Length: 100
Image (cartoon, rainbow, N blue to C red; front, side, top):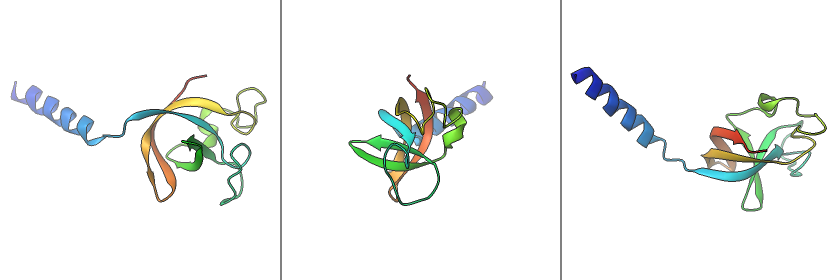
């Protein structure tokens, strides 16, 4: 019984430590769709409150071919639910769920 209580307590502490709330964002290629110029190539970015930020913690190809005409981030802007936080003008993502 002590082990069960200890494990539950540990899980509760871990859950509370991640206090990043989920939010709805636009997710796409920073260079192709959001016109970010601070790095070369195609990289995943989020747009929050009309401002775009490159993403750390997820890669543009983690969600399929970035150049697919219908779903690729270099071709379309997609809606997503994410959690994470802004740090040093980048979005540190913990969780991503595509909504479309």
